[in-house]
Structure formats: C-alpha cells, structure tokens
Length: 280
Image (cartoon, rainbow, N blue to C red):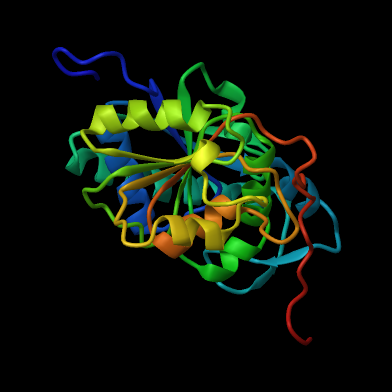
C-alpha cells in the first residue's frame, strides 16, 4: 500500500483484534484511519474465546447473553452461535469503515484465548496489533478485556491501544522512553515521518522523572501539547500504576502505541469469572 517514492510501511499489517461486538465506534474509526495513514494492510481477527467455551460446558454456568440481554443457560452451542453473530456484526462494521476510507480489509475468525493477545498467533514480522477499547466502561473492567490489557504489558509485540472517544487530529508524535533502550524513539521517529508530523522525545538523561514513570510525570511532560499519538516504551509494571498505557490513552484521548520488550512478571490472563444473576 506504500505510495510513490515512499519507503516500505513501518508496519506491514495492522491487525485489529475483536472478541465481541462491543468495541468503541470512534475507536474503530480511529484504528482504521491510523492503518490508512501508515499505509498498512488492514486485517480484522475475531477471536472465539476458548476459555469461555470451556466454561460454558459446565452445568452450573449462567451468563447474560449479549444479544438477548437476559439470563440464560450457557452451552458451547449457544455461545458459539453468539460468537458467530458478533463476528458478522463486527465484519460489517469494519468493512463499512474501511470502505469509507478507501482501505481494503481482510477478515478472519480464530478460536483461541481472547484475553492473551492470541490474535498474534498468526502475526508476522512488522505487524502492529491494535486493541480497541469497548464503548461500555464496565466491559473494560471485566473478562476478557481486563485480562487482555494485562497481557499487553507482558507481550513484546507492538500494540496500539485505541481509547473510546479517540480524537483524530493533527499534532506531534510524542515518544516517551522509560527504559532508555531506544526502541520507542526509533519507532516514533519512523511513524512521525510516515504520517508527516513533528516528533517530541521525552527520555534519556533529560527525562523529567527519577522514579518509575507514572501518570503525573506524563501529564507534566505533555502540558500544553495536543499530540496525535503517544509512543510509549513498555515501563516496568508497578502496583501503583498498572496498565499505564491504557490510563494515558483514556486521559488524553489519543492512541498509545506500546513498544519494546515485554515483562514476564506482569500479571497474566486469568480464567473467566463466573457471574451470577442478581437475586433469584
């Protein structure tokens, strides 16, 4: 998809992962727009969550069906049918957005764990994985999305976190490099050059923090800046500021690209939590 005179895209493919039909419409628009700006091939992957299918085989399991909005007995067949319906909805939405922006899209369905970046199983070198925040605030706190966020910290793949209400605007690309390994600065410079934006680098000996990076450091460093994108080197996860990248994205309403080596000690995905209906 690279234009005349352009170098190869920074990311050959932009792979958007879905586990239901509840992703933010504004986030999806921004994700497709970013893939277009980066001249990356757009791929959508809907993940039929294996742990949920296994959980639904229990005779004691009950859940709220996303389509009927009522308590119902969960079975592997009924959950698979819901996944199929959600995949069709997502495919239509993604195709509609992509068509409006003049972007071609490849769409596929995989059966794996939706909470552990397993749509990266078919990832290739120079792929960008995109996670779009759900529109429903409660869904961001529940399985599988909450565990998917934790998995981003442990992964070493580049991941673009797209918040609900993401703003699509012109502005600088900001590189924040907690680990001083040069990865975020390098990728930020490549991205800025590709999309024709200026670059602001924060890190190195002049970094405005001496302790582990936190939200207050970021807000102070970006005071007065209306950035288009934040590129964040993966900081060491801390109990006081878990999932810092997601907090930055939500507070500033811009996509946050997380790059660099993952942290094996980061909290891993858990099994689904069985929810019971209120009252009986």
